Image (cartoon, rainbow, N blue to C red; front, side):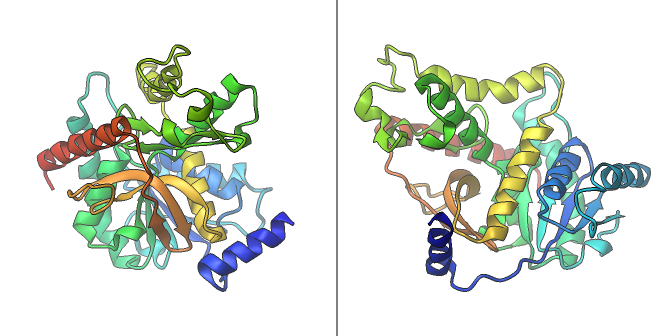
Length: 334
């Protein structure tokens, strides 16, 4: 029954499904890029992966490592490397994972500028060989880099996607499920806005087993909440901060997130994930800014971003998230 329903949904949302082009480029062969590559291969989302980076020796070693580690997963897997972009030609999806690792004490603007400089070096080559690709940005800060991608490339906004709050939303639902003593699959809810400290939990839209959490607990997530559900949101916020403080990488989580997004696009079934896209004109936001909203994904990117009904507090937090991003955008040297 489930499979029949999925086939009907696919037909209603997208018409006839087509076999996806499985060539994927990962631009940036650091820890994040390699994690993305590993999960894309492990989930059999590609049989032709191209790693692009400026460091030739590092590229060669990374490609050999990937092929050795995944040899038994896909007999037809082809892994190529390049620094000039030529071998990336006609990729269906391009993952941008280039950038600098956040340093202790580094401001968001400093990190954004350093990553922007790295991304700008790759873009001309990627766009030359892949003008029709869908781009998924994993470089941190991903929302800002997705805005930069669209500004510099002129690509349609539906083909410029930030990994956004997908991972935040997964953790959000998992933590709620733990507190309720149910499976994570029984929880529906999203984190929206900017990935990280400014992310917005949509408590008004959380349901457990089909029942609104606010119906069960009207004060959930508010300052009057005696059960302190806001600690769930703080745990989501702390995830990235703790990784940075311990001087490690968030590569595995990002790798899973990127493979989820590309997998959803390849399936072309109308999966709804909280990913980042340009929301200018949505939710009352008038600036060109990339934030996460629940989004219907199709084979070529975002088909629709869903405008959620928000509480006054949630809307205020989303507006603050947008204002914070716009302020940083204005300071980045393009």
